[in-house]
Image (cartoon, rainbow, N blue to C red; front, side, top):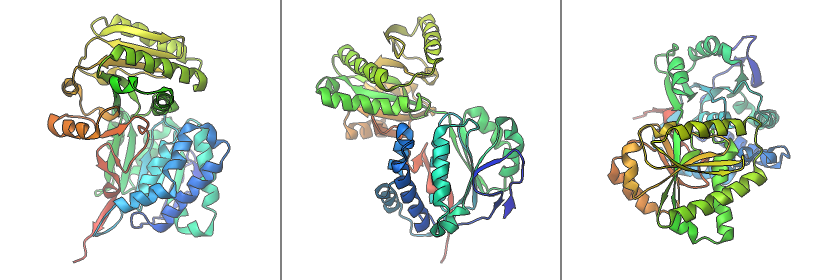
Length: 400
């Protein structure tokens, strides 16, 4: 047991005195809590206003958790490592809860630092969780969840203090943040899972897109919108650069972006600064005459920049609030020299799964850890950024 006594720490869930609990992965009480949480979140009227909370409720449903449990096969006795400290990103409201799930499912006690910004989604999640943890059946799990908040100007002092006491850390953030936190003292057997800032792309077959009728097209656009705009393009798995393959690419591109613009005008709530930021980015891109080809601008809601060639460091081409890049590929092989370890997710449409498997197995591509259909970009899995999360956050007791 250790204490988190510090006047700067605000406990959203949990107590200052932390009692370490260690369970086996996919403990029944943990799974039951996630089922109940999913049900409560689905029924919450305020939660329905946020697409990311709808995704979260779907992720925690019983059918999905049971499938994850079934897929996790371990012959040896495996238990949690102990206390896991989660430092979560400042710009994705629901990320902290997925990180907490990683720790709980792995059998660990958890201290989760949420963003200092008061996101409504965090408030909704914590209210539901606190209510559920009042139930007697969650007496054990209650001691394994500690959700805290403190200001970023205290990150060095408080984060350093907690790091000394934990058996592992999950660090989400940019390269500088991760490097800074990695410099803090930890226990000799403590390990870190670092989820750095990553870059994601999409691959769309123009021929297949042009064959779609209106209803199928609306479904594709909605899936793409959910992948990108539900997180303002902030999620590491949200694509910024769309690659086109197939015939009649220009025609397909126009049809696709016309429909994306309609979706955004109807559904997306733009912050006031978005128009100015996107226009400033456009001016910068136009000045890069070597790669800039043309642009599509749909009033202030959507900007699409066409590239005439690819250069190194594609991961620096980033958009926000409806700002995208696109490029016409002759072949998927053209991607290989430009994909590095900064690339996380490839979402795809109209491309055969076996064809993609063959491409990745033979191309010796240096980056991309996830390849999923458009619409599944934000579906966090227990294999994330190349980590087998449950096994990385637990240990084997070898009994002979």
